[in-house]
Length: 116
Length: 112
Image (cartoon, rainbow over all chains, first blue to last red):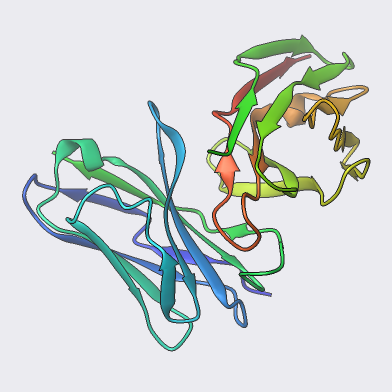
């Protein structure tokens, strides 16, 4: 079946602009996660959704970062007033279940964000 | 807090050599443990997992055993191939259902 998809695959933006990154999880997966992968920091957790709720937003680095999920499916990560340090690969993952059980997470191909 | 530490790379091996990539974890509970692999130009893929102490995960000739007494989950393969060249990430589940905690990744390069 279809895996996790993300769009765009690459995004180049000017410092100060807003960007939106999209994630389509595997159908039926109730848990959705956003991570950021950068050279200096490795893989960092950003936010976790269970359904449309976000019980864990502890990884969002600043209030410029926000995310939402609608219909228990598609999620959008928004970065406002982008800075050069936001340049990274943003990864989305989904999992069949969330709290109370541990299932492996399936990752999308990522969106490479470059802020110039 | 919970953390995962894995050996720094790069690891450079000849084809058919034995591979070990060390991984240790700290956790307040009993996490599940994972190895993910990222081939050049591709996304993260689950390689294997173990959900409780003494479990052995295996896939594609790779193995790792969940050792609670040493808080370790070392990845091993008896005979590596050029196609195994990739970045390997050890991860812990943290609390069930929440974020994965990743090690920094180990780059493996296998030459023929």
